[in-house]
Length: 229
Image (cartoon, rainbow, N blue to C red; front, side, top):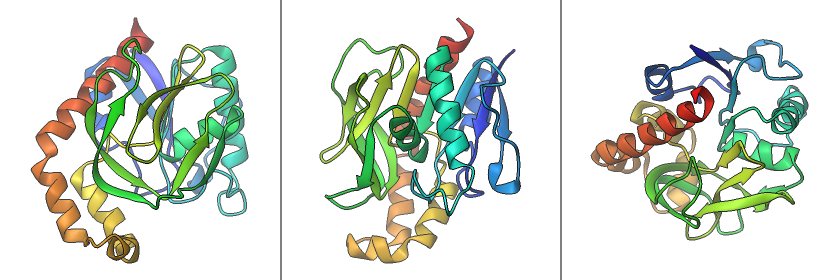
């Protein structure tokens, strides 16, 4: 079975649904946890790379000392043509690693159930508009020089591709409701600023779970197929 190296930045932002979907599609997952002291390799040890989200900023090297190594790993993966997917913070790290820019989102955070509109019809991974989980305060404000925009929300870039095989997804497709409930509990003040509360956000996601998981599993299957052929 093909092997995917997974970089997890925080205990609350793990593989979620990917833990089941990717192996079912033929892609074995091998997470590393640099916040626990795990080594970040200089190149991908496996057949694919997935970099997950986290509460820190993509340039917060003083908070998460492993981030420079992750940015280097992403640059190497792009250069080597290794199938790569960055999710939320992972997408921001991919953008920063390849010449793009990330800043605080000028239109405010996106928290909870959202949707993305695809801007191109010929991408192998991001295919069709979809419901998603949003949970970000920073945004990709400028794509890498050779990045191609693939999807937007009302306010922000949501998906891009660098080269032939590296994708950044600002949104989450892997996040189960229990994960989002934990995030909501940590960001109650931000939710109040949007006129929301944690219970409403989680209830909304549970109501939409069937559509969310259908779209997310289809994307996971497409990524696995890109790796396994």
